[in-house]
Image 1 (cartoon, one colour):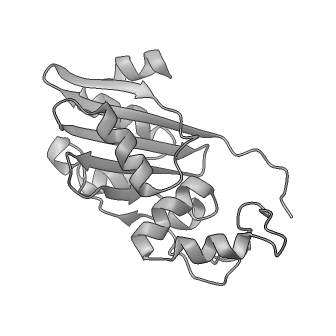
Image 2 (cartoon, helix red, strand yellow; image 1 turned 180 degrees about the vertical axis):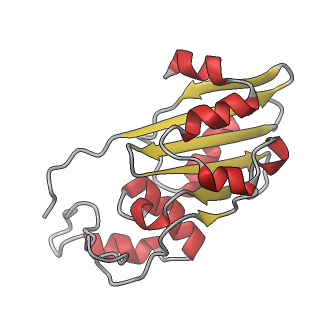
Length: 180
């Protein structure tokens, strides 16, 4: 049973170019896996340079995925327990915790083959409907933007305005605000 609550996401791509950083909002409608997200980032890359994908769920969590050329994506999530309660967040936390997304998908499909909605979580603890624990707080590679001027400590301290602070540190805050 779904709660009828609308989940609001915002996603942006920050792509490094020879002239600095370009920022754009992005549509995640066709993104179902981390590989899809990495492909989306690579399409936005200039000469296989760094692209940061920023995803936030309004007032709950944010995630960063860094893609450098064909290297494996690096991931950071501000609050793994909160992120695991949403579809895009679960995609990131599943990768970080080595959870089996296929098993979760099987659990979401009724015997008649229809989807039953996103996994429901118990608000009193940090487990999903399957009973698997999801660690509270930050999870992933907090150093993924250290070489860009944002230390792990600074990244962990970011709150609701994380995207603006990251974009400002990269020098593309004004460009981002124009597309937001």
